[in-house]
Image (cartoon, rainbow, N blue to C red; front, side, top):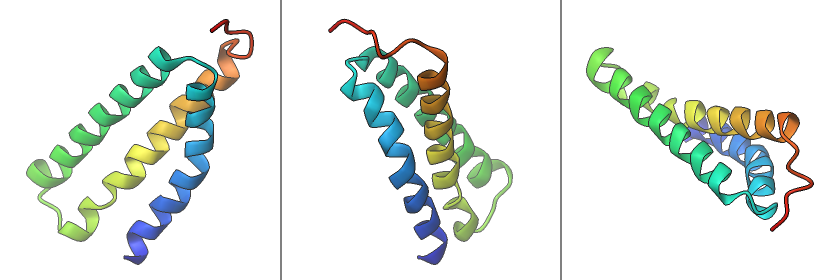
Length: 88
């Protein structure tokens, strides 16, 4: 439980950035970011379970991968593109 609690703290910070994209009306962008992050999540889970055959404790680290990817892509989008002038 302590291991997963850290990822929830990351999600609390990341969700603000991700929801900013949703709230600005850029739902296609938010869907794309979410789709890419879920793909990364699935690949990471597959690698940890099937390839590296890790213990269940370490498989929970996939949550960190997912939330960090979501945060990275959200922050990159918000800093790179002109999302403030989006016309809804």
